Length: 272
Image 1 (cartoon, rainbow, N blue to C red):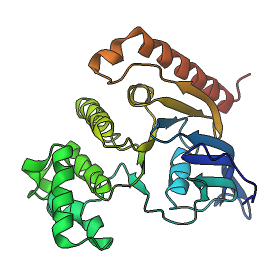
Image 2 (image 1 turned 45 degrees about the horizontal axis):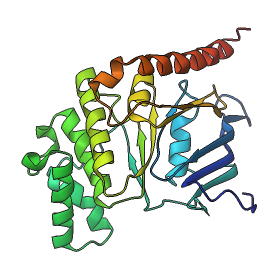
Image 3 (image 1 turned 90 degrees about the vertical axis):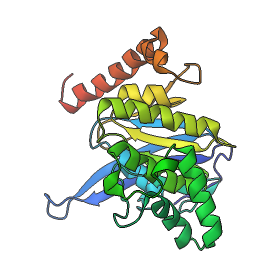
C-alpha cells in the first residue's frame, strides 16, 4: 500500500483499490474483482453502491469492514489504513445471523458482552436501541417468533448498540417481500435521521429504487473488474416519504442510473 499522504477531508477514502482471487477454473490463473476502484464518503453521508452482479460491491464492503484484505491501492477511515476489523465500522448483512436460542434483547446485548460492556449498561443500551427500531414489545421473543422484517431490525439494533461511526449494509432487505422492504427502508432513514449525529453509511444494493430512496449519492460500478463508473447526486428533499417515489425528480434519477447500468450490460455482452 502506498505511503503517500491522501486527502483527509473524507471519512472514507478508497484509491486505486485492487482485489484479486485465484481462479479455480484456470490452472494458476487469477480473477480480478476490483481494479482502480476509487470512492470517497464524507462524514454523515449516505452512499449506495450499485452495479451489475459480480462487479465487486460486496467485496469492497468486506474490505472496508476489515473482513477481507486487498491487493493494491489504499483504503482509509479517518486517514488511517484499514488493517483488520475496525470497531468503528458496523456491518449488517442480508442474513440476520441471530442466535436462535437468545431473545431479541439478548441478541442485541451479545455484541456488547463481547466488547466487555458491564451487564447493567448493556441491558440499558439494548433496551434503548430496541425502542429506536420499534421492537420494545418484542424484546423477550426468540428469533423464530419474529417476522423476517423484525429479525432484520434486531440485526440493525445489534449493530447500533455499540455505536459505530460507520454503518455498512450488504443488501439487508433483499430477501424480504416488497411491502416489508419499503417499510424498512423508511425505518432505516428514520433511525439514521434521528441519531444524535448521522452515521456515515455505505449501502450495497441491486435495486435502483432502493438506492435513490435512501441515498445522498449513488456510486454506479462497472462490470467486473469493478470500478466506480459514475456518481449520481440524489437531490431529493429529506425527509423522504412515499410521495418521494412518485416525484418527477425520482423518475429523472432512475432513468439516469438505468441508462448507465444498461451501458454496462451491453459492454458485458460484447455489444458495440
